[in-house]
Length: 258
Length: 292
Image: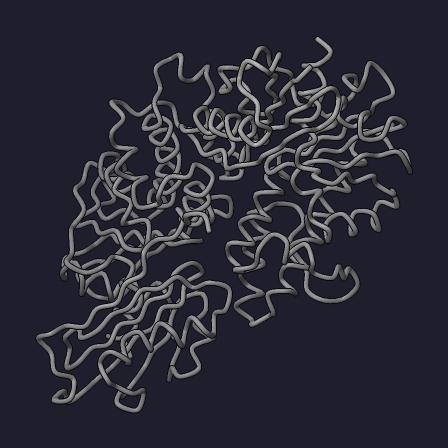
């Protein structure tokens, strides 16, 4: 059986194809605004092409993410926490919690009860857009997201920016640049601020378990953020390859089940 | 490489009517902003050359680059210029300037040069700050207001939105005006709330109510204008008996090029803004040059 999961996020659309419970193809592209529906369809066609399949071969397509309703050709939609929980248990069957760090939203979903739908914790209103902040800083610093991820994480000493609000963090970063601080140091300060916020969200409702926490979402690809968060929270996260496809994987698995 | 929708085109120009080699006095102004940097060179009181670039991450390099965009094509050197004044957020990085001047004073001076001597309300719409300046019959600034902390980054916010929505930044204003009627604005508190909310409007639920891309942009730009209006409203009134009198109104800064914002502000203020042959972003640099 071939199923497809589509995760339409604030910045990117992720499409993943599952063939007999194995991942056979994946693709990622920009969401855009009004063109989101067409972008999802185009990406879906690309994935089918790369897997040498036709539309009729796919028995079910399931959409998730904040723009899931734009996927008009999907058989049904699932909410993000449900997809995240499903994906986490697939990535690591003994997982007890999953954290999804996206462009806009951050979610922590404990998996102990009802497959994680019981007590998800979201970002507090003022830590919205942590992934967007990283993207904006990459534009501003003229570094790729990978360059920023390669910055050595240095919490002791060095420069810092506001860790409460992304708007103020950016202003602080600009002030540092104005004082001719190197862009790598500014990137480190931004990463540190992101890590502080993420750690706060992680501890928002209950103390997180020390192991068995799966990290997914686009920001989980950022090595500096992940290592910083590991150090600060003391949790040894399980980070899969292609972490940004977490939601799409969950959707594809749910498509295969139903 | 993917198309960079968020970048505003850079520009530089030299006047063909002026020969700098015959000029008695050459002065220059440099405005290093958080988002854009501009320079202006004056020969005997006439604008000779101007340049407008994106600041990028290196403020020092931007300061050097913006000036060379005028000097190189003109065949001029820094020694030919009698006095150079720097202004803006990054003024401290203009190593070749002889003095640093206050932004508000420079923008006011520049606006009077660009829009005529009768300007009484100048609204400077920058990348990070929004400033409103009140002038009377004389050149001195009598009152000015800044954005509240949470209306910061209005210009930069639109850059980010252009990137997320994948719409060229130069088209956002016009598209927002194509909506038949402005829908309810998105959050007017903070752009980190407004941006995801705007993207969220593009769901099917929103489309079912017959909202198009233009309507969504209208809702977003309306919210941005709303915040700017709050800054203008705090200005000392021109006529203590009537708060709706703004005299001659002028918009400067990068967002003055966004017709969606200027048209909405004009509508709310019941006032048509003055127009100028110059790039509105040059106000700070022109003012600095005139005060140099």
